[in-house]
Length: 438
Ligand code: HEM
View 1 (spheres, protein in one colour):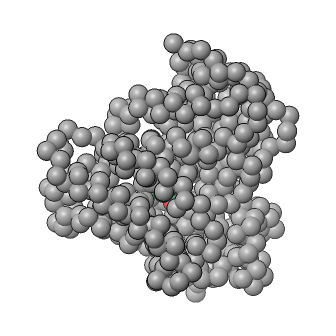
View 2 (cartoon, rainbow, N blue to C red):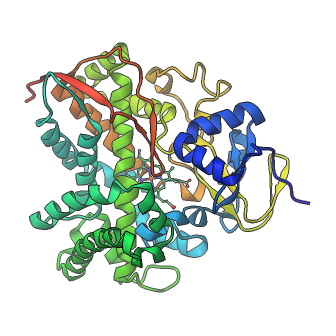
View 3 (tube, rainbow, N blue to C red):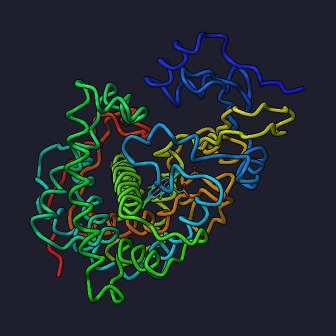
């Protein structure tokens, strides 16, 4: 017999509203009341079973991908990413497409992008205002968008780059109303959502132009961008299913990289500065490290930021068959939810978990079930190496190029935007001075 763990007896509509507004706070409240395994009910999703015990999370991440469907759990993003997105696929096709996309995100490939990332960051930082408060999140968004456009998509045409820079932020700042038509793409043909459809079509046009350029490029073999690698692999028919990737499939992967890799990394960087400016000792240590080129402390800052302010609070897997987890036999159709944010705040795992202390990450061996900002198992974030490198490089450039003021203002609270937990004021900082660097 299958059973569900206990959870709040509130109607699904009420729980959905509470989660949309106070996602993590609601999960913390449920954990306090029901313990490390509890069930929430959300409109359109049925039962969601939160898991906060690393042992249970291991069961999910190490489980059979045919039973634990992440693509199905991510299906609400379908109207933007498209049906072939690696985020939305499951089973053999997911394994196959994911394999094709791994090479550009390997550590060595990412290391080759180092100079470009630093250059993009430096150009942006040079324009930061001095002596006034400003939210740094939009600046970080500009930097990380540029990094994806240049490294993943490989865009070089000035006009096309300018158009993408203008269009992408408009696609990412969607209201709740628009997200309905992302979850259910057929709505995009109805009048209230036609503007959204047009915005997606404008970005598509630019992406298809890049794909056509790459297919025709005589120097394709030398190119290092993700799109070139995908075109090469698909030309060789490298997919296990023997099928080449069509233009539409390539478009879906590019849109996925833009969406998955841009605001996530920008938000992580914004939180890092929000935390550092409230912790003078850590800020001083990080600045010294940046000036001496020591990346270990900057790496620790990035890891501790992602622990204490995980950009994505939880990840889901829809069960395609009953599964035994945490002493419950859960029915097929249940979404199991490894709760990244709950584990990261667990006193049994992290001493004094509410304290921002990068030192705890220095030389630490992190377990994939207790430090999991990038999810896990066969669905672990494809861009994790790039995101971590970007965080170290951009933080290093910021701290070498400007002197940041510390603040005694209370920490910024969380604001949910889509599936991302952002600082509610956009991480307001103040630059005391632009420093002269060689
Ligand atoms: C700090 C920045 C980032 C965070 C916190 C983050 C987090 C995540 C998380 C939690 C998942 C879901 C994992 C799961 O279900 O277990 C994911 C998946 C994914 N991420 Fe990231 N991500 C970041 C940056 C990036 C970047 C830079 C890229 C690429 C340019 C990227 C591409 C992807 C892709 C393609 C997937 C889908 C993987 C699959 O389903 O097989 N992410 N990410």
